[in-house]
Image (tube, rainbow, N blue to C red; front, side, top):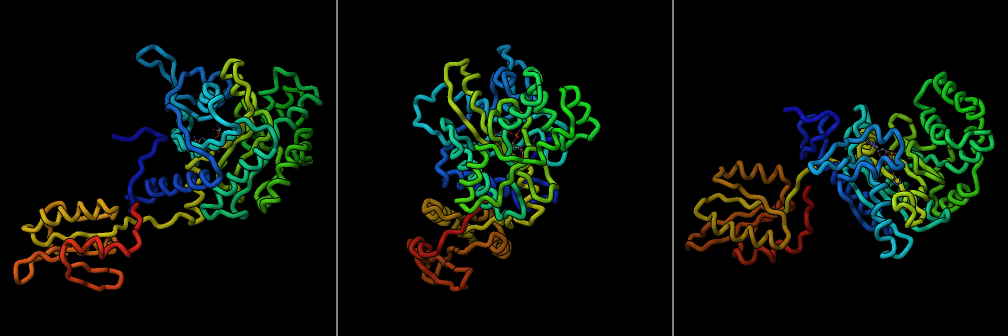
Length: 424
Ligand code: HAM
């Protein structure tokens, strides 16, 4: 049976073919996400993968609502698989904002589902690193969040030649919209048109803007001038002090498709422009208020970084490490009569946190040795009986090829000084 289109199987390494998704690469990405977020003082949270449909129809915006995996559950509730995490976060904050000291710095790595047309960089399921700051008004929060996005990408070995964070401002666009006679009821449609500028033909863009009372030239002119509003200037100065300003540029060509953004917005792209956005986010000061039906009013901002584009980019730049399973100990069972004694020791060695592999059923010695080499075991151990019938452990350090015969009790003492191998 085939898997559903737009979904992925994650295989262990070595991969069955070049197209397969690697569970080791996924783990590598998750570990980096988690470690940089933790370094920045963010704490982890999560919500349910299914939410009431209404959570998304309230304010996410037409595009994402059209892509919902939604259905009636057996209790006749209209529900949806989560297409993004921000509404869930807003719901969680609305319920318990009072229990936490502000500002909150929270991160999560949910799997999200969007019923969209499958294409390069876009699937029907992806994992997304979300980092959000809640309860902070000033541009210091924006800069902290952008620095986190930059350092996350840098942690994978990507540099300022590889990616850029395009910074823009919904507030600047709103001012432009109002100053040039835009009607309040057209505001979101106008943002949608700007969001699509780079993806649609010039004629389609011109037509759409004309209907809203704008000319394409007027819009291009505003983008080209890229005059930083105050907030953006402060963000850039903050990032300059950290030595990170080379990673950002003001670019009003970005506006974001999601409806809830209110201030600064950002999108991270590869510099060669070969991939879709790696990350996107912004300030959304009214979403918690909207979701709590006016009960909780708290400013917030955040970004989401998807694993699909990131993984494609890392592959293309050859920045993914070689993933290979390695172990600490291969416990060879050459004589089946010593299997039970061997198992007792294997258990002890594993209890001491070493990774141990051994044959589950009788196997030839040379096959076992080959497997130990494949697994790059640091130690090769086997039990045997000496001439006086006593059980001894033959312990070989495969790194320096030293072999010693010791009593089984001494095994753990001998292993101790060796640094632990990781396993994947
Ligand atoms: P978004 O721009 O919809 O934002 O998604 C963020 C990132 O997730 C995108 O830049 C892209 O890398 C990845 N992504 C989105 N959809 C797909 C897909 N179908 N397949 C693969 N990757 C995808 C949000 O979701 C906001 N909720 C982010 C946010 C957090 N804003 C504030 N806090």
